[in-house]
Image 1 (cartoon, rainbow, N blue to C red):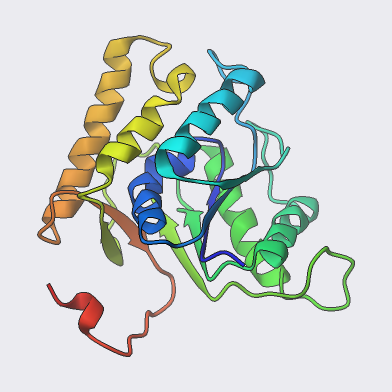
Image 2 (image 1 turned 120 degrees about the vertical axis):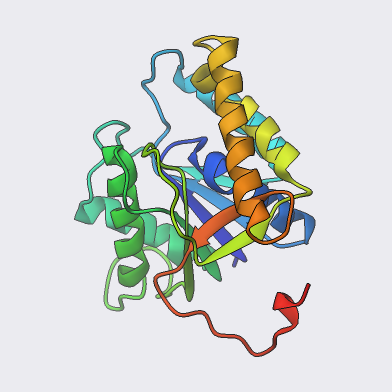
Length: 230
């Protein structure tokens, strides 16, 4: 069983949306796994071998020791029974306490489909009388991270303080050189600058230097105000 499972559409999506949070959780001693639905290729400047090497370097930066990459089709990812089963089986085997899933609204069709697959898989993972691998399991908590192509800010349910780990997130993103820097250093630095500016904006909303936003479709219950005290 893992404490947290972060699901990404392509390698680098989890880093872009929740890299600082993942690094912070690992530092806190939580077990964090990543599930990428596709290998991310083809892309203009990447190859499968290049992408695997970049992902390994990113894992080392964030402290990720368990990462699974499915072979669902990049660019043509579709919500289907087969895709749902593939993801549900990973939920049943890993049994995460918290799922971090991609936000369900985006211009990128793969991101939209990935969110639908990951959400549906949560429900069917609890099915009995099935030939799916693993025992029935329903991940109790789902939070959505933001890695979207739409130029907009989204009102989050909560913001995770990543003041100490944003540099690790940025270094993990830099590891994906073929995706962000192969088109030119200027473009890559612009992307990094936007990530830092966004983190500063969300951090400012909670009195922190940097923050990452998350959204919950369900109410969040508390037994103590201690986590909310400054």
